[in-house]
Length: 452
Image (cartoon, rainbow, N blue to C red; front, side, top):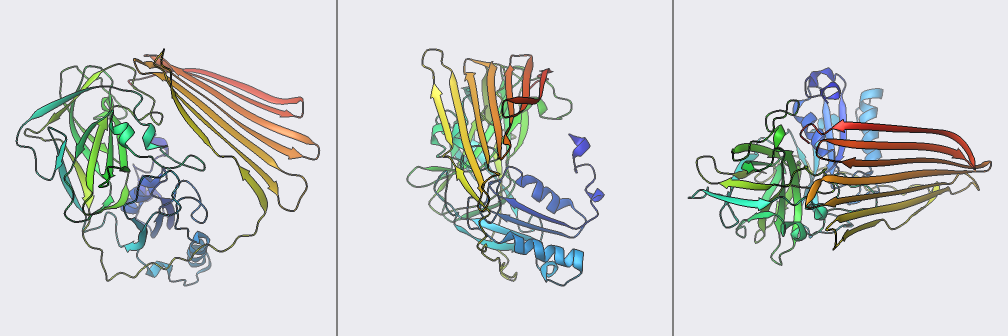
């Protein structure tokens, strides 16, 4: 991983950088790592979007990001003074509380500039995990332990790590929280603005040599609905090093620092904050292979906590960002997208948990009779909660190019299984023109789990 990472030398980048990201995208952390460490002129624009373009993707509000790109390139490539470099380097959409919804049309909030990352006024405030499910600003008076059985099927309510078109954001977290250890604050007396990277500091034990610890931070409204704010997961064998993992020793207590995803979110007065701890995030993370009883150690000399990046009132001396709404774009293709399917099922006899995903997109040029394309995707995943070593995931993606001379089909299929020792991967790629075979290739590989 370090071969392609900026972590070892951010100074290797010597050109100005303009980063555009989304709070619901999977790659948001990288935007802010670069904002903190780059030594070159830098700008960042981060909105509420998923892994889609800011002028069309969910969630709104949408902006004319092409206009911002032109301002950037005109300054650095043409030498024109567009005023962009006179503005604060960070333009962020500050997100207000909102109910859990897969496809919200718009996230409530406002645009704001920040002059540095992390903001100088940010305070990493600990909230402590206590017996009886308490989450409080003061450490608990007494030490305690909470043991729970590892359930590899927890995680479906959190949605995809990197949501794109079709499958939506996280749902109400209560379905996952019912199978997690939860800690809930009292109703807040005043709003709390989170802006930065939360991290959980846990003290844990496990009966297995490999165990994960997943943490989800949520906003609980007065009616009980639970909106996911941020989440993170750590394989505890990587507690000291990703390059040199070490197995867990049953009965030994370990301190874990679990970073959550960077976030902007204002929790209103009267709402409660909740931290849910489990040992899985299915199907985002491949389950650890061993059934286990995991334990959280609370209180004592080093009490477990979640450190929240809290910022007070914004700097009112900074200008308000002036972003333009997206202009009407010419229609160059007629696009049909099927309603994506995301189904889950529980097999009552075997106990298996199954997930099925499907989507289809058809595109046709608006002014030409030929040149259409069809894309279909499906994936299936299956696990046995009592046997988390044996997991199966299969998927297939097909592109069909419709041309006057016939159809060209490109189809890739993948099948991955695991046991306690290794992953088995089988990939097939096929290309055909009409009924004629053009190209095919297969890949087969067995990969050691290496404490995964």
